[in-house]
Amino acid sequence: MPHQHVAYYLFRNGGTFSKLQWWCPTTPRTYLAPLLQGFHDRQKQTLETFLGSPLSSHQWTQAKLPTKLGGLGLSSGRTEIGLEVVSLADLAFLASHRQCAPHIQQLLHAPLSPHFCECEEPAARHLAAYIPDLASSLRDPQAHLDHKAVLNRIHHHVHLGLVQQHDRVGQARLTAYAAPFADFSWNQDTLLSNVAFRDSPSMRLGVSVFDDSMACSFCQQPLDTYGHHCMNCMGQGHKQVMHTSFRNVVYRLAARAGARPALETPHLLPDQPRARPADVLIVTLPDVHQSSWRRFPKLALDCAITSPFQSSVLRPSATTPLAAADRYTDLKRQHTDMQQRCARQNLGFEPLVLESTGGFCGETATLLQSLAKVVDTREHLPPGHTWQRLQESLSIDLQRGLHGACLKQRQQWSRSTLSLTEVGAGGLHGHVRIKLVFAI
Image 1 (cartoon, rainbow, N blue to C red):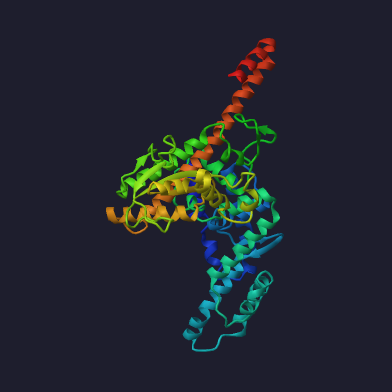
Image 2 (cartoon, one colour):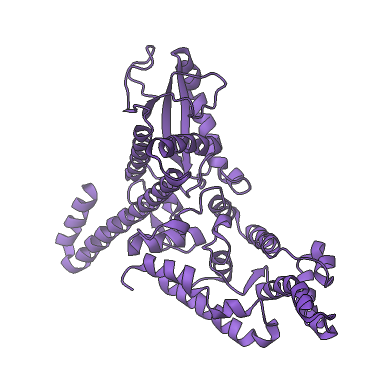
């Protein structure tokens, strides 16, 4: 298909849900092992084709995790915890077998044969080795198994194992992409261009998007191969573009809610007339959330995007979801005593902070969700409709912004490479040209 994001969406929601996935709950794994292995290999090859890059075992294991745990949500008959392979087909068979047993017995009006229970033994023994706290339930033919709950527990074990096997940067990446709302972009849209789509899951999985030994073309700092520097760099101006896009989304939401928003309102603080604490100034509505116990008549919404890969927050980001967003929210309030200065002018100050990986700070999500509910009521929309569209819009804007930053780096390096080629072909005249290029 010409559009890779559409092709991926069909692959994830259709190609990974084949007839083989229906056989797993009804047939012991020993009869399906060759088919399951072949299907697993084809899934990996297909994803590598989408990304244009081979995947390591860790990256492929992450891709099979649910999006809420930082994966791509691909359904597979197996996963890995460290070097050990865990068969999810065994879990599907065991849960289905236990659920169907009472109904079969009721239809036959007779006790089940010993062979019926014996076929569970290999699956129960295999799973008990990786979930020892459920060993008794797995080995008891009469015990009920909640397939979804056990599968969720296995996925959490897999995610924890991946985090433990990575360095601090990898831990921060896995934790940030498993933060609340960081998964939304993979569930709802097919709107990214082919190049932007390739960059987005690559950065999520830790696949290199730049060559080694490159320096940023704008600030001359080292440019890591995973594109994390593009989330922090202020030299190329793309971070301001992403901030403006976020601000405009909030403005349009507030306008639809009837909050009479105003952009970049000046003279809000008499002691500092040029200060503009409000990217978006809104009139308080009864149902709009405020973090303060005091209800202010107006709210100054200060929009910001921060990165969990900054050196100052890398350590907490490696262990705590949204650590970067929470710290930046506190910094916004405390910087120049902004929250108290606004309060003295009877003005509420509310930082709205997103992480560049897509996660929302808790207070940000609560305030935006309250505005979205007001819009649903005013426009007679189904509950949650506006909130869903808002998350989609923010997610798409973030991914396009990060792709734009990566693209700008590549374009700058292409110009530099072209100029260096001219040096080799043009001798002294080429040397003069390359000096002019870098002078500009």
